[in-house]
Length: 222
Image (cartoon, rainbow, N blue to C red):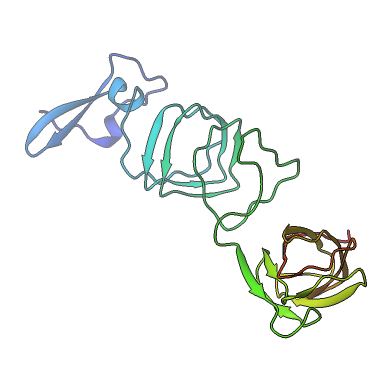
């Protein structure tokens, strides 16, 4: 193969299908064609810069680093072990996903039978120790409170739930899980780290240990 000085090479303005680039690998001269370069190339652990637009369909990627890509429709595939910043995905089909946070500017909805709510591990249980006005501590966003064993009363009583997950702007959902008597339940005095539960029966006087469920809905003032 004749050696050609770099300065003597012609300047290519268009890459034609018939164009080839000679390369030497292990002493053997090979040809690198336009097809190998630009048609269905296989990239192993590529590090991509900014991807302005495009369609990734039925793809599998490992070790891909994408910085501020804007993707079109992702029909299917697996994106694994990747880091992305500023990614915008339009109508992606996502399977099981995990993460530490999700911020959206529109509604979060579910059309499945599972609905939207807390997953296993978010909740806990606690039982009153001394009386039905004894405070309890449960630092979970959802859970069940078992009341002290006593007779029901139509006279309202109140106890405090100390809970580090609660902010003053949050909303507490409360309902009766079990018990023979029917209870009226109210949440009062929501503060940073606690809320009060006020309750009374509709007239029942059964001695029992009813259970109240609660869930913390995160809220903001503005």
